[in-house]
Image 1 (cartoon, rainbow, N blue to C red):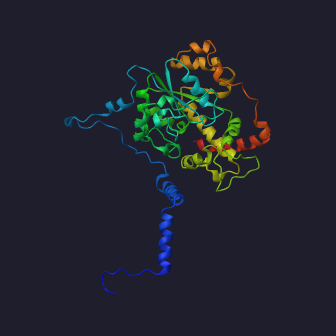
Image 2: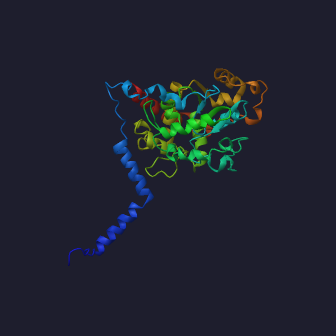
Image 3: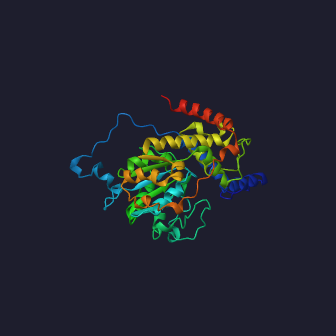
Length: 364
């Protein structure tokens, strides 16, 4: 065979090449490959440099020092401090957002990190609302005119790098949130279900922001989480290829296991254990980094008594609280449901095991 003429491939080699091409084009393969590389290459926490401290650049060159870094995330020109609401999914955070939405002097943004990207289409899409969200309409109305935010938005914020400490870096996320804060016509309130494990970063980057933490009974929340799946009865065991995700529970655990190994679904027999550990860790992050923490149950039973101190703490108009102005937004409290799912002993066995593991992991 003369030089330069490609050698014909055997049928077996051609078949192998077609298989590799198909594999390379497979979404599932690439997703798995990316996940494996994140585990192997990016999974370990970046070691903090020891003995290295910030110092300004040489004055002779005229370079600015860190004194100007805060400008992007500084307080608004009108002096209004942004307020972040942090909560788990299905914890009553939509109710809290709706209350702030109907509060004078406030612009309340619904789930800024939601993968549905409310700013697209002028923020006025007639999206169907969750029937459990009473009197919640047009989630994206406050985003009207913000289509250009797409340049900074990253859909992977919902699934990846869910834990961020004070030294983490995500310039796109910082710029995106800063733009919402800057553009809000009134005091910005950002209701977020995807920042609870990023609060150390949020606190460090947005120095002039306040943080309100909302939490809910984990057993009741577990039942609410299952509304979006086929359900998970007490006897159902977790399997490696679990078809249901239980409202981001397992996907979040697979990402956060790099930082918190105890949430790894592979370590547990029932999905409630994963849910409970995520709830507990989120609760601890809220206690540590938020200015105020409130319980959903208190909010449901007495809006004025629960939010009165919150509004006073953050300097928000409480006129509607005094006049029971939010009554039409709050549905009557439901009876406790979890005893119909499993008895107390079933829950306590899982929760006790999780508490022991969590205490061991967090102890010095």
